[in-house]
Structures are given as structure tokens and as C-alpha cells.
Image 1: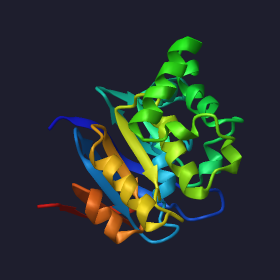
Image 2 (image 1 turned 120 degrees about the vertical axis):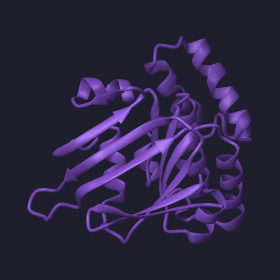
Image 3 (image 1 turned 135 degrees about the vertical axis):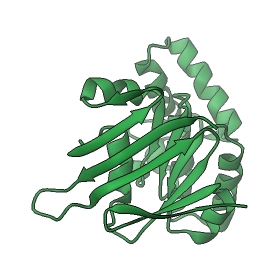
Length: 221
């Protein structure tokens, strides 16, 4: 398996606090669904945000798809290939309707309106969400918003998915639906989750963030 993404000696701290990342390193390979665990406040979400340049690393190196990424200009390119599904869907969904939310990314990638709406319909059909196409986004349930958030990222056709606590507040049926979706996607993934059963169902490998570093690593048989 070829390496898609590699983080080396990542260091980051918020002003006034001790560093939450103090030498974190790991690699993600084609086809992997890598789960990232650690206690609350360990820096897991921060690490995902650093990968796509939403937080600026203070030391270390991010390498992906054959090159390194440093400034915002670089990360704008990386965000075309790496999609982040936020922990809170309300941070991701801001348009009046589901279709408009999903079309937003493709339109910003330069697709025409007709092409973007075709991507919307294809993405909704793939996720079995076509019935939600014209729904008002803020009136959806929490679980429905989570699936639509995933749709907004998949519409960008990323090569890597980053998912931050994707099962928060999901019932068992919706969690199983999400599991079925993720294990059938071709993208490599980094998944932050406290849900042990969910992790066991989706992961191919797991790592743990502790004291700012990646402390352990296991691979599913």
C-alpha cells in the first residue's frame, strides 16, 4: 500500500496552555481506515484540523500526495483532496436547503451549476438520502444532519476522509447505517471516536494519542 499522508513530529499548543501535540507522528496508507483514540482534550480534533490547515502547526511537517504543505495557499490545494467532517454538523451546514449545502463545495471547485446539481443527486442517491434533497437543513434531526454533513464532503470527491466523532448522538440504527457507508467507501480515513463498538466495526488499524504523541498502534487481523 502506498502512503497518502504522513505527519512528522507535529507540535502545537494553544496560547496560555501546555502543548497538546508534542511530537505526534503517523502515516496513512491507501485503503486504511485508521482510528485515533485518546482522552478528552488530548488533541485529537486539533490534529485533524492541523492536517487541513485550520490550525497552523508550530513545528513538524505534513506530507501528502508527494509534497509537503506549509502555508494557506498549500492547504487550499490539500483541502481539495482531504475532506473533514466536523464533530458538530452545525459547523458544516449553513445553507438553507440540503441540496444547496451539498452543492456548495463542487461550485467552489469550479463545477457549473448543472454539474454541481448532478453531483448532489448522485451523492444523495449513493447515501440513500434523496428524500432529503429539498429539506430545510436546520430542521433535520441530529442524525440526519450528520449524514448530510458526510454528503457535503463526499460531493467534493476527496481521496482522504477525516471524521471527528461521527457517531455522537446517533441511535443504533443510524450508527449501523454509517458503518455500512464507511466500510464500502474507497477513501482512506482517519476517524476520531470514543465509540469502541463503532471503531471495531470500521477500523483496519488504530493509534492512540497520549501526552501529545502517538503512543501505540494496532492492526486488525
